[in-house]
Amino acid sequence: MSPLNLVHRVEELTDLELALLLSFVANEHCLIRTEEEALDSLQHETQLIVSNIYSRSCVVIDCSLETTLDDLINGLLLQVPPGKISTAIEHVDKNDIIKAPGSGRSVADVAFQSQPGPREPKIADVVILKNLELANYDIQIQALELIRTKRLFTHTSVVTAPKAFCMVIIQSSVGPRLNKHLNDHIFLSHSHDLEDGFMNLDNASEWIEDDRSSSSSVVRKSDPQRSRDGAGITFSEADIQTLVKEAKNTKVTSEVECYLQNIVTFMRMHRAVDGGINSRSTKYFKTLITCLAPLSGLDYVTPSLVAIAARKVYPHRIILTVPERDRSLQYGSELAAVKAVLEGVTPEAVIEDVLAAVEAPL
Image (tube, rainbow, N blue to C red; front, side):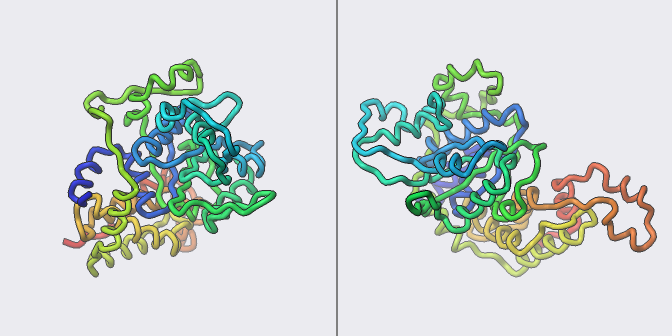
């Protein structure tokens, strides 16, 4: 399909769908945050997007302090017993998101495992890790190792992740941070506002009727004006590869490159920042701006795309300083005054301060 036709379809995507598309185009991993009570709904919404819009296999692992390495490994693998046959797969392959009894996976995953013919254990195209920040250090390091090497060591074999492997981490907006090394390998972060609703979940409400009695599931109706007609939007692997090719051909002028570097410098020098702005974040920053351009129908990067990329790459990375470490204390500032200045500062506020301070090229 031509890039122009893809742009028209991109314009109809929700912010969450667009965040996932950017991760697929960059072949990287993402972090999605929302309020605590909406985590289950966000998980189901993400499953539907991955299966219905991007046609990729998906598994979900709900992590906690009790999660073990065996739980993680078994959750990642799509094990298919040889010769097991199911005759009702076609009707639940992509759209069913109801969890199978006694399992942490959706019926869609179980159906995939029930397809006839022998299959070797494999890792799903997309792995959704919910509440990974609550898991212990070993679990998070195993997730990091999978991101870095795309290999999973089991008790009997080594399983290689698919080429288009993507890890999606879902966590609460007020939860603890991920391990700093794992956090550093997350390409972008997206904050899902409850006002944005769960469009795909609403459209597939007949599949979750049994789950609506759960007190932990929050399902809010989307704005009817945003509902889609017909079968909805889909992006094939060929469509994504078209966007990948366009992203590689995107031009970045010296003025825009200078603007990007100024943002990085101002971010590092901001008085509220104590760390997190490293070379890997700058690499992801540059990658994201080239991925955004073809989604806007452009073959070059504009300053506005750089600003959008900054708001996606840095919120989960910025480490805020404590008043006692503020640099101005070395030159006579009062600690009480510093505390008053830094009170209530968030990573998002830091990014907006920097974007307002750095002059964009004309």
